[in-house]
Figure 1 (cartoon, rainbow, N blue to C red):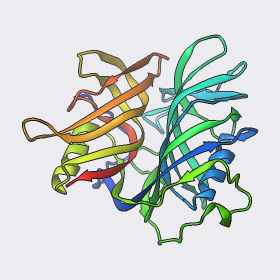
Figure 2: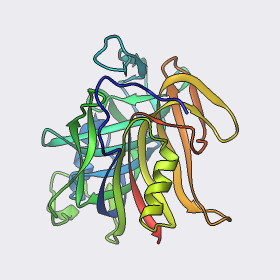
Figure 3: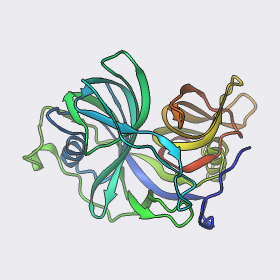
Length: 304
């Protein structure tokens, strides 16, 4: 299994975790505002400081993005590319989003697949303050109650990254409590389920990390909500290999289940982009896909 050497010392805690309650929602992100503004308003409408979800449909204009890149200095092992502006409107295919807090204000981390006006289908890291929703986007996921993904400095990678931190319980606001929100755009379900907010550190295989986590807690079936991260290249379960070692990815669908042999098995279907601009998709091979910089997600317990 490949690995990455970051400038700082690895932390002792390789999987940061907080036990949470997860509350499902479906909502529509309004147009004529930045992605950050649209998400923050929608989350305010359901009284959530933290959520993991997927977006589909709709689009953006203007639109720009970054990709993973080789580091230009010794301060980081890897970095981000320059910003790529896209001419015309883009149609969103799908995206995975982690919503949390940075310096006490709403922030998000999102990787996406989109289709440009030229017809090119591409993948990358969204810039939430710089892109504007030009057609309503559908979002489905879970509000995270009891912990908040919070941007914190990370000594190992020298980045600031989302880490789940325990939060005080807050009463859930209804749509009527928030006059600034569009009451027609959100459907809130009140049923909550047990879950965990996780951040996985570098050089840990993402599949086996989730399997080990579930095994230690007696979890026999779990659904992955959201899922934004990076891996050291990639190996898919059909044998395909992504050789460029700097990638960013989103989980399109994921779960941890008990197979016919009674063993836990993580199944992660992903889309990714590498630093050379190649887009790859498939199911990650277990035991062969170490985290590059970070991986954050919510794990919803379905069986224990």
